[in-house]
Image (cartoon, rainbow, N blue to C red; front, side, top):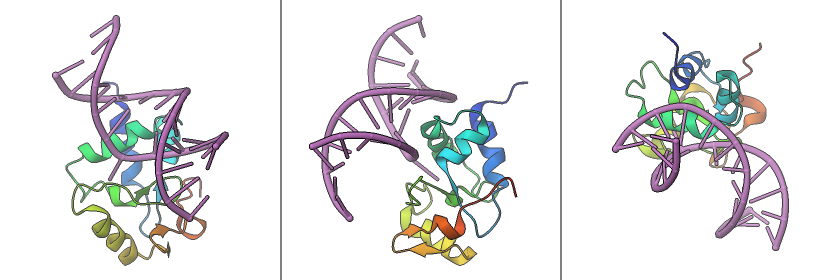
Length: 103
DNA sequence: CGTATGACTAGCT
DNA sequence: CAGCTAGCCATAC
């Protein structure tokens, strides 16, 4: 059985370490399509298991928070803050908290 | 198969 | 810095 792009996205999202965040573009690239950031977002909003898929650790290339089907931006920011992610105003400080999958 | 949608990204004004 | 446009991709109908 061949895994769909969405399935790959879930696998990647699940391995994002606590206290770090990944961008849609980063996940899209790991999933095999660097330009499928939009498809990544779609998978995220379609997810039903925030307990196994930390979609709140997924942000835009600018570190900005988007969507979150379980409380909106405030809930997402709160979760990231609680995990130790560095914030810059209303956005994530990617310089300090961007996930480095190769390390 | 073609159209529509969306939690994106990069570039321009 | 804020707002808008065009391009790209996977999924649903």
